[in-house]
Length: 188
Image 1 (spheres, rainbow, N blue to C red):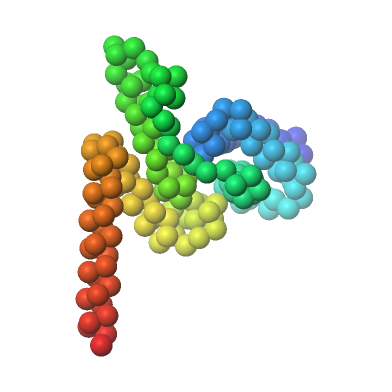
Image 2 (cartoon, rainbow, N blue to C red):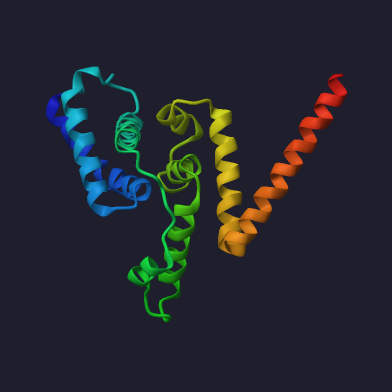
């Protein structure tokens, strides 16, 4: 693959990288910087890319790793959007789909980083479990588990709000403890 073909393929993935970066950073400016840094790193490391492999997954891995490094460096916390900030995102009541999208975005910010990341990679970006596992550097089973828990947590937030999600999480925690206790009793 020539350098110009490599660059053209990278350009074709920019919209996907922007969408992913916006969701994980929750900021258009930070997302733009992250995508730009990703492209610069990818172009510098072109010699490390193996032609015939998945360029999209390679780019998303670079993007994700840059984001995690930035979080570690700056010790940024993911805070939920406060009520005052919701006014900024509010739209007219006649635009139900926009309201639903805003509500989903608000709920997505309340998910853990791992759950949000997997939902975006698999659900929104169309990555397979194997590709998502390669991007995140973990096993396929871990991806499936995080995806399932993330979907359930997002559903609870969307349907029942914060209180319903806490109750569901509390019930799942109790169930897991009971399972662990039962497993220990059987093993003994």
